[in-house]
Image 1 (cartoon, helix red, strand yellow):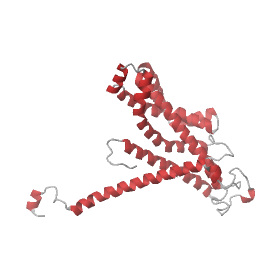
Image 2: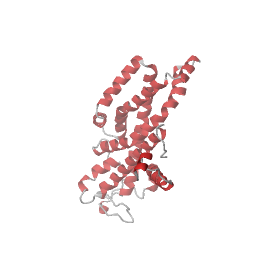
Image 3: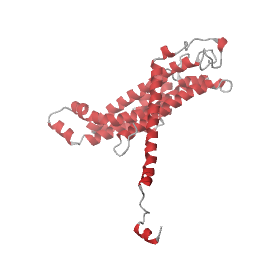
Image 4: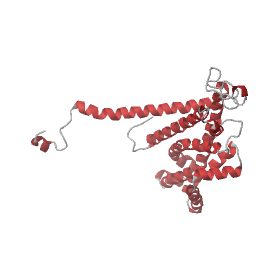
Amino acid sequence: MSVADLVRYPNGAPRGPESEARTWAAPRRAARGQQLLVWLCATVLVALLLAAVAAPALAPHDPLAINLSQSLASPSRAHLLGTDHLGRDLLSRLLYAARGSLGAALATVLISSATGLLVGTVAGYFGGWVDEISMRLVDILLALPSFVLALVLAGILGPGLANVVLAMVLVRWASPARVARSLVLALREQDFVTAARAMGASDARIMARHLLPNVLGPMVVLATLSLGNTILALAGLSFVGLGMQIPHPEWGAMLNQARPFIQTAPRLMIVPGVAIALSVFSANVLGDAWRDRLDPRHTGSQM
């Protein structure tokens, strides 16, 4: 480029159609790749949920049936993933374990999100001492490590999947409450809320008809983002013996039971570990996609 061209085009010579096409091709390919990943993760998560629901129909064997003569059998036509140390079919146990792992995670997320939504909406709308008491309790819960606190509560309540879910709910409602409160604080001063109040609408009607519909979107995103972490936390609690109890299968409990055989039969840990990793990764990708979809600053859709 000559000196005259440099003076005329200080930011470089203008690009032609081919250069412009190459410039926009890479972002489009990246967007298509992200969209494909989102749909793939959605398919994986839906397939896992359907497999959990249809476990009695899909499982080739009784997950609790013991056959010591088939102990640690390698994968075969009769046992597609082999058997565990008690001769139980690994595929059947994996399918039934999904019912406990994914079911408990969904129950935890739904109950904790609903609790946090209710507390945050009431605290943000009324303010005053209701807001102070609620948010100070939220501050205490958020200041403590959630997994350690859930571990302590589950130990106090006793082993069992229901107690673990209760312990997780008692710990995890704080974050949804904080988010819901912040959203309600911004919405309660809007003109439509003032108009509804001027028309004589009760506080309950204003919260139910005007505030909650505007808060549900971000709360769904938060719930989706927390699903993967909840699956992982529940698996950890079951791994230490506080979740689903023997002989019923659960992914975290299956990992714990397979520890003595990590060298002789590593598939006993690999199979439930892969199931946990796939479900957590898929849930996190879907949560990120929902967040990007509902974020007004996001220029492209991934869903």
